[in-house]
Image (cartoon, rainbow over the protein chains, first blue to last red):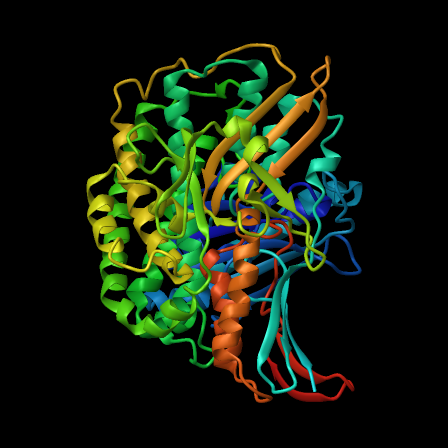
Length: 157
Length: 470
């Protein structure tokens, strides 16, 4: 099973870019073995669906100097000793899957650089303009990580 | 030379607080305080808003227990409309509230407190977290995660989303329950019930390990307050207020919650932004009481569900005053929540589509009272002729326990803190008494990663005599 988790705060402008992309692309999934979760933030309870996945893709926003830049990195499980209540990292969720269930899914974190994170229900004009291109890059990273076609061909809105 | 110890911030609680401990010249604890160092201001900034916005607005007080504020706020709005909401809507709200209590209690017990309970107060702080629990007892850690998930999923099924659902509205709820969702919930409830029972059995067997803490956490004697109903059962949604004294004898009964201002006043202390409510007839501080799981189980005759009642029989054999037993009470309430949800899902009209009473404001004041995970929650609104809020008064569950927490810190510090040498276990026990109450102090500012904790023993000259950091 491939699990895609898009997360961010939909009231804080570009912070929502990860969840918006995951949500939009969830309409074009190729297989029923691919699941998409949308969340405000990563919570410990996510370890339950994560531990049954072969690959977990986290899609988040980040800060940086080039708005719209798409970064990705592999996530290694880590048993972080910090707070495990309100907010957890992708690495600690994979670490929890290993500690609690003995499973270690592969993990990829895709981060999209935002330009404004103030109170706003919409993405910044800059990110909105670049959204088709960002979406294509995210799709490519996911399919490259999964080594299978995850999405049907889709047209940008 | 007198010295002061500061624990700032207190860890593994909801919100931000610090503890100060004052030592006398002999190095023994002279005084201690629990300081809540944050200010929210919801009472003030909702003034001028339309009353019907209150449930959504007030639920933003908290990210852990938004449902509690949603329900108390909606009840206050029902009172403004002067309507009796449809029975199905009331039962659906009850289910939502019970799911919320179960998941919040699970967070408190499994995530925040189980590391102390399982690994011990003196365990390596690097291990005192859910990962440490997983290494020793993975099933317990898995159960904690699953219980939280079940509570949240029920909230999501009913309210549309896990945090800040907008489904509870003035006059009832916005949508009826579907048969499909009911079936999904029934399956989850059974799972939750089994986990709750398994955890309760584990705790009952382990409780002899905490004898010293039970004694030390039990020296502050207070009254208890909570909601109950005509059958003297545990009541989380409605009913009347009851107070009992430290020996379990009734102080007053059948208090109408909407008249709370007649019998509850709030004291302001200079060391905290959190006010200390007290029972007016006895004055302050004699009128101090505790609320929450321990209080609720102490004031009722029964829970009203079979397995929770069996557990309550065992619970009754313990020292009802010890705040350490908040943990035990929390587990019994989780069990109760799943049993009660199951009962409510089997009520004949639970799928009825009559779930909302429509009306305009018919009075200028409304009070809504319900039981939140941490205790009795009061929302009180006044509106003008246009339905705009002119005054809001909130007494949050944690507030009721403020003075008891403050005094408990002093008693536990006296028991465990001695002299100029500090230890991790010493520090952790002082925090643990606060953790037993499961206070929810801010509900909006959350720590990311490990909270820095610094405890310093400082001489009046400013010299740091000893220091513990994590």
